[in-house]
Length: 229
Ligand code: DC
Image (cartoon, rainbow, N blue to C red):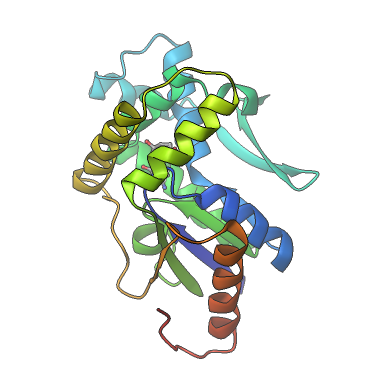
């Protein structure tokens, strides 16, 4: 049996930064499920399929063969045999990913891939529905969040460091819109699993969050179901 940690939470809570560090320290692989939805979105964009046309997306999603490999410890997403990692973070793909991810058939296809990966490897997997749908029996579940103001400020600092001009209030409004969409969609909405530990990273450093998650995982590994604050 493999050892699995599930991490869910809203966009910008720091899930991937934290999960990558936990993976390194505990010798797990890091599975970024958002990248799979992004690869599906990239396929639709490249094929010129209208993302709003649900029937067309459903008809075509089976033709997107998405596979995951680990190269030098880094997750590489292959779309029909091509390494597409460099294309997944573009704005157009992010927007399309948020739309394809509401479609039940797309989710079923990608959740099957996620379950298979988790069954065959010790991993920390992040997303929106990992603790609730993908890995209901995960050894440890974390719901990682931060206030929308803090998440907006982190994003603002990231963009300004790259020399981009941006508006903090607009970033926060976008984050709140996305939270609303993620939490209120019909299929697998973002919500905390009953047995997940709530971690609010608003006033924690990355190291503190990583240490907290490692302590939670170690407690669970010893079969101790102490609840954490
Ligand atoms: O975490 P991310 O920004 O890379 O995710 C991309 C999109 O996929 C985002 O709109 C949320 C969605 N997603 C999802 O619905 N379920 C997951 N398990 C992971 C991501």
